[in-house]
Image (cartoon, rainbow, N blue to C red):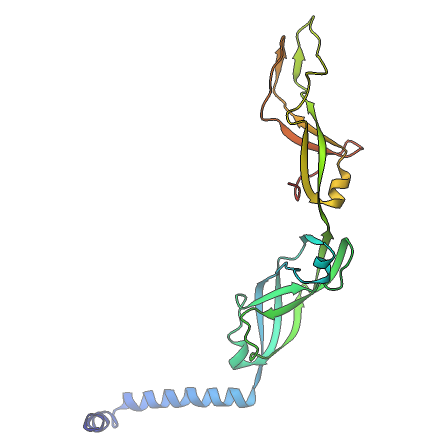
Length: 228
């Protein structure tokens, strides 16, 4: 106590001490006024990630999978208490879509919603807007099918006087399993093992490292993404 009394006697008359006290009081007064006159504030949060998780939903129970979602991040406008929404960031919030209304395959337009991933139910806020407000989501069932593999060597020639034996012109393995969305598997008509190596053969030869290419019945090359 004697130390405090000595400090008070030494600094009470000091202009620096009075200035510090004035600043502290001003901050406290501003804080009190902002809470009473402006109890709710609006806050914009950018780059909130979209979570693609349909586990436990009607879509999942119907054996559907999310093939693609065209929205990766959203921007949200929140309205709430300054002391509460001030702690919310793009790391504490996530965007999601409700897949309970989805029971069939196809492309769906679903509303995007926001939730606090920290699980703090005491933080109350109003969502003024979400942009984009909806996402285009493709649902399909995953399937695995077997396909025959046909060799294709456009730049390999046979020396004159020799002929190609169809029984020896084969791929190993002759069949492969492809897993992917059923709608995309339906498009596959031919699977080629393609080698663009240039050579002229006079005897049997084994080519390795061929590239697999998938084609439709109309001979259109299929994008292999989403297929395994």
